[in-house]
Every structure is written in structure tokens, then in C-alpha cells.
Length: 159
Image (cartoon, rainbow, N blue to C red; front, side, top):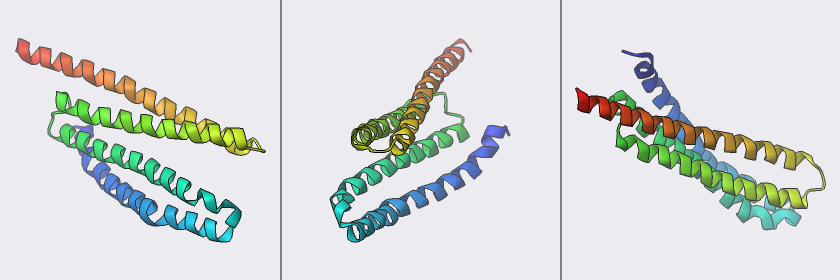
């Protein structure tokens, strides 16, 4: 049994834990935090629903990545990762990262225009660049998976 196959079960356990934590944040923590902010800082109360929507959407994007990763791990375990079925899940990851990046870019631009201190825009800029790197790495990994799938299909046809 390869190292990759031995890593699948512990990784799936951590994915379940991560998904549960994300749901708690999405349903309880962030909405509660923004409600509390609106109550204690009435001058920022207008931000409660936009911030809640952005947080819920961002966490939904991460949840899509977690579910797609679970599905890809299942394909690894079944030795079917180099099939067309895997591309659907890799595409889901790429689209989720892309959607989160677009929203984060919008937040960066809005905060950057309205900021009176460079701290938040610089942090958001680092996050925008970091997420762009992750997204582009996934695009490259998708291309590599596509090549490997084509090579494996060609090899199976020869044999």
C-alpha cells in the first residue's frame, strides 16, 4: 500500500473535522459576531448583513473545496484518479477558489478606497495575492492531471 493510500483515511478524518468547524463558523460564529458588532457599535450596524453574507459565501467556497477534495481522495483510494471523473471535482475546486478570489478582490478594493490606514489594505492585498497563487497552482495541477489522465488512457489502449 502506497503512502498516498495510507494518507487518505487520516486526511478524510481531518476534512470531516474541518467541515464541521466551517459549518459552526458559518451558522453560529460569524452571524453572531456581526450581530454583536451591530448592537455594540451602532455606527457600523449597516455592515451586519453584508459582512454576514460575505463570510457565509467565503466559508461556502471553502466547503466546496473540502467536499471536492473528499471526492478526489475517494477516487485515489479506488485507483481512479486518472479518469475524466476527477476533472469535475478539480474544476469545482478551481471555480470555488476563483469565486472567493473575485469577492476578496472586491473587498480589497472597497477597503483600499475607504481606508485611512494602510494595515487592512496591505493584509487584504496579501490575501488576494495568496489566493491567486493557490488558484493558479490548482489550474496547473488540473493541467497536469489532464495530461496524466491522457497518458494513462493511451497506455491502457496500447496494452
